[in-house]
Amino acid sequence: MNKAPLLYKISKVVLGFIFKLYYNPRIIGKENIPKEGPIIVAGNHVHLFDQCLTILSTKRYLCYMAKKEYFDNKKVAWFFKANGCIPVDRSKKDSNAKEAALSVLKNNGAIGIFPEGTRNRTNEILQPFKFGAVSMAQKTNATIVPFAITGEYKFRSKDLTVTFAKPFKVENMTLEEANEKLYKEVLKLLKKNINK
Image (cartoon, rainbow, N blue to C red; front, side):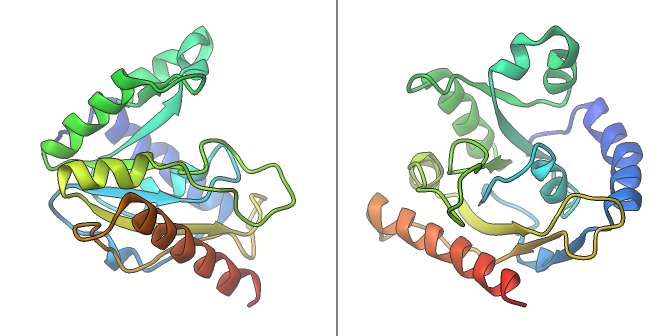
């Protein structure tokens, strides 16, 4: 099991308290997050703070993959590094990032990933998923936990919600089948919460 960096623990307590107080988020289905074993928490991406919602939903150390631009920015690079984030170069197939994530999973750790690859700034409810999440799950026998974030990030929000679906394994699926299942699970959660 991967151990959380000290700053991660401090940030989760201090910044997590402020985040919850300010945004008033709802967390649904956190019991679906396995307490042990390798897991990949995967879902939609709409806001810079999306990872905060998933991190606050579990006691496990959730290691996120983040675009390398954050690590190139001296003002914030220290924060991402100290929290154990994995830099990803989105302009190419980043083998270093993939190997780092696989290492976390092979040590029974937890990875957070946004399969859309970037924040969704389109009018579509969900962008197509890249294959990274299901590929890593297949290689490490990790469990995938789909999630969906809906609502607005505003003070004392009335509808900001993260919902977790039942976890699944990709054991007997092709990558295409697994990716389609993950996409459909996230889409189903999104439609359910948006139409409430």
